[in-house]
Length: 86
Image 1: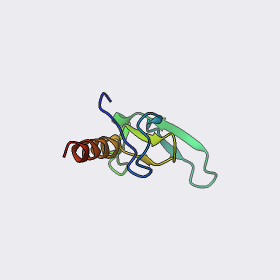
Image 2 (image 1 turned 120 degrees about the horizontal axis):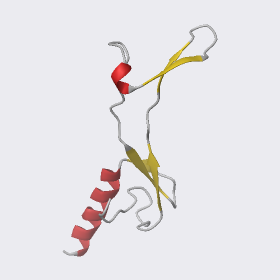
Image 3 (image 1 turned 30 degrees about the vertical axis):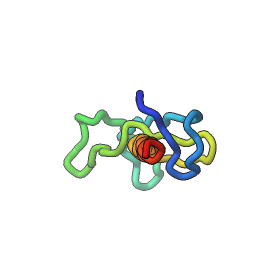
Protein backbone atom coordinates (compact mmCIF):
# COMPACT_ATOMS: atom_id res chain seq x y z
CA UNK A 1 0.00 0.00 0.00
CA UNK A 2 2.46 2.60 -1.19
CA UNK A 3 0.34 4.13 -3.93
CA UNK A 4 -1.97 7.14 -3.80
CA UNK A 5 -5.61 6.33 -3.06
CA UNK A 6 -8.79 8.18 -4.02
CA UNK A 7 -12.28 7.19 -2.94
CA UNK A 8 -14.26 5.97 -5.99
CA UNK A 9 -17.55 7.15 -4.44
CA UNK A 10 -17.04 10.60 -2.90
CA UNK A 11 -14.05 11.39 -5.19
CA UNK A 12 -12.65 13.87 -2.68
CA UNK A 13 -10.87 11.82 -0.01
CA UNK A 14 -7.16 11.20 -0.59
CA UNK A 15 -6.02 11.05 3.04
CA UNK A 16 -8.41 9.36 5.49
CA UNK A 17 -8.77 5.61 5.15
CA UNK A 18 -9.29 2.54 7.30
CA UNK A 19 -7.51 -0.73 6.48
CA UNK A 20 -9.75 -3.66 7.38
CA UNK A 21 -7.83 -6.91 7.76
CA UNK A 22 -9.87 -9.97 6.91
CA UNK A 23 -8.72 -13.06 8.78
CA UNK A 24 -10.90 -16.11 8.18
CA UNK A 25 -11.80 -18.45 11.05
CA UNK A 26 -12.83 -21.93 10.03
CA UNK A 27 -15.33 -23.42 12.45
CA UNK A 28 -17.74 -26.33 12.79
CA UNK A 29 -21.08 -25.78 14.48
CA UNK A 30 -23.45 -28.12 16.25
CA UNK A 31 -26.43 -28.17 13.86
CA UNK A 32 -28.97 -28.20 16.71
CA UNK A 33 -27.60 -25.60 19.11
CA UNK A 34 -25.35 -23.51 16.86
CA UNK A 35 -22.49 -23.88 19.35
CA UNK A 36 -18.96 -23.95 17.98
CA UNK A 37 -17.70 -27.51 18.34
CA UNK A 38 -14.37 -27.13 16.53
CA UNK A 39 -12.09 -24.45 15.19
CA UNK A 40 -9.95 -25.65 12.30
CA UNK A 41 -6.81 -24.52 10.53
CA UNK A 42 -6.95 -24.16 6.76
CA UNK A 43 -4.99 -27.40 6.29
CA UNK A 44 -7.59 -29.30 8.35
CA UNK A 45 -10.59 -28.51 6.12
CA UNK A 46 -12.49 -31.40 4.59
CA UNK A 47 -13.50 -31.55 0.93
CA UNK A 48 -16.87 -29.87 1.60
CA UNK A 49 -15.43 -26.86 3.42
CA UNK A 50 -14.13 -24.31 0.90
CA UNK A 51 -11.16 -22.17 1.99
CA UNK A 52 -11.59 -18.39 1.97
CA UNK A 53 -10.64 -16.90 -1.39
CA UNK A 54 -11.40 -13.22 -0.78
CA UNK A 55 -9.23 -10.19 -0.20
CA UNK A 56 -6.73 -10.20 2.69
CA UNK A 57 -7.76 -6.66 3.48
CA UNK A 58 -10.21 -4.02 2.31
CA UNK A 59 -10.01 -0.23 2.35
CA UNK A 60 -12.75 1.95 3.81
CA UNK A 61 -13.05 5.64 2.99
CA UNK A 62 -12.79 7.66 6.19
CA UNK A 63 -15.15 10.31 4.78
CA UNK A 64 -18.10 8.48 3.17
CA UNK A 65 -17.59 4.93 4.47
CA UNK A 66 -17.30 3.17 1.10
CA UNK A 67 -15.54 -0.19 1.54
CA UNK A 68 -13.85 -1.72 -1.50
CA UNK A 69 -10.70 -3.66 -2.46
CA UNK A 70 -7.59 -1.48 -2.51
CA UNK A 71 -7.34 -1.77 -6.29
CA UNK A 72 -10.52 0.31 -6.77
CA UNK A 73 -9.06 3.19 -4.75
CA UNK A 74 -5.69 2.96 -6.57
CA UNK A 75 -7.33 2.87 -10.02
CA UNK A 76 -9.47 5.91 -9.18
CA UNK A 77 -6.38 7.86 -8.10
CA UNK A 78 -4.57 6.87 -11.31
CA UNK A 79 -7.58 7.84 -13.42
CA UNK A 80 -7.85 11.28 -11.81
CA UNK A 81 -4.09 11.83 -12.16
CA UNK A 82 -4.26 11.04 -15.90
CA UNK A 83 -7.21 13.45 -16.27
CA UNK A 84 -5.18 16.27 -14.66
CA UNK A 85 -2.14 15.71 -16.89
CA UNK A 86 -4.14 16.20 -20.10
